[in-house]
Amino acid sequence: MEKQIHIEKDLNRLIEMAWQDRTHFDVIEKTFNLTENQLKKKMRKLISKKAYKRWRKRVLGRKTKHLKKLDHKTTRFEGPW
Image (tube, rainbow, N blue to C red; front, side):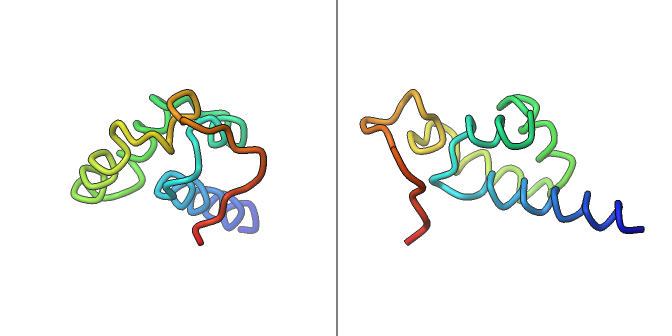
């Protein structure tokens, strides 16, 4: 039972990080060992079809989700504020 709660908590954190604008796909890959394509497949399973389409539209081409596309390189955590 405790392992199930831990897995659920990890999945919730994964979804939260994927939705955050300033959390790069590289950070998600380091944290959860998922490439961008693997994350897309996982998100498709974890959230509703409508939410998935909204998420994909939101992150598609967004510079802040792709570390290589950023004009500036972050040296510290940039929170949502």
